[in-house]
Amino acid sequence: MKFSLSQYLNNDIAIDLGTANTLVYMKNRDVILDEPSVVAVRKSDQNIVAFGKAAKEMVGRTPGEIITIRPLKDGVIADFDLSEQMIRYFIRKAVPSRIPRPRIAICVPTGITEVEKRAVRDAAEHAGAREVYLVDEPMAAAIGLGLPINQPVGSMIIDIGGGTTEIAVIAMYGIVNSISIRVGGDEMNEAIEQYFKKTFNLLIGDNTSELIKCELGSASPHEIKGSMVVKGRDLIAGIPKTVTITGKQVQEALAETVTQIADSLKMCLEMTPPELSSDILDRGILMTGGGSLLKGLDERLRQETNLPVIVAEEPLLAVVRGTGKVLEDLNRYRKVLTRIKKY
Image (cartoon, rainbow, N blue to C red; front, side, top):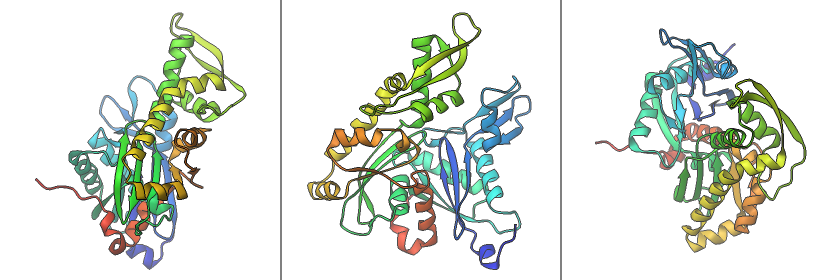
């Protein structure tokens, strides 16, 4: 791969370090990497076997000496060493080793603690970053969607990721109020797995529940037709078993998770100043993140709030692109950077 001198000198990258997927953005090259946040490790010597897509394919299919781990949980680092190695791998994959150490901007959930912020920063520095900047996910999403965050106008974002749902009202380079709940795509998968256990006495894996969610998942009152044959292990007999599940049943499995998201959105609206509420009434609520692709979820939130709810054109890319824009114009966006308190 050939690089020009300008790319050599301007190798800053933005990272959306997600619970489910990690995306990397580079100036003038847009999103250059999108891989699952999964690491495969050999238990005997703790050596890394695979990262990203290769590791995701191993989930639930490995022999006893190899385990697959997600180093991030609920949007924050759960395993520091593995997170550092995973970030280093993604950086090296995106930026060849002959190019100088990059400056990195990483988006983080609004609800994380100072300790968790420092863990993200330290992991990126240990992985080879020259400088590290943190940006709140809703702010990054708003910038990525081109919303007027510099004006005294209220913009509302709901970003539904793998581990967290971020809801925020933004105006004048700041987050006026926000709610961060540790509910997202992973909880939807877990809800489907639990439904199969209770209803069919069937144990299914993460990849299967993810597939069911994408194929048949929806939120009421959306009507989804069709069914799907699902294979798993019978919890009573202990042998492989096949069942057929309908879209209505998957909707029932996801009902509680969808309700949690809707209730949090209404709570955030209740905290919003009246002048900004009128802006949201005019401009609507923008949805980003992989969870916003759940069929009928925008319709459900529209019904719950009586407000326009719009799913962004490329909801999976809004956050990483916004983080990249911050890095490209630090002087303009310095106010939106998340500061880490010093003790």
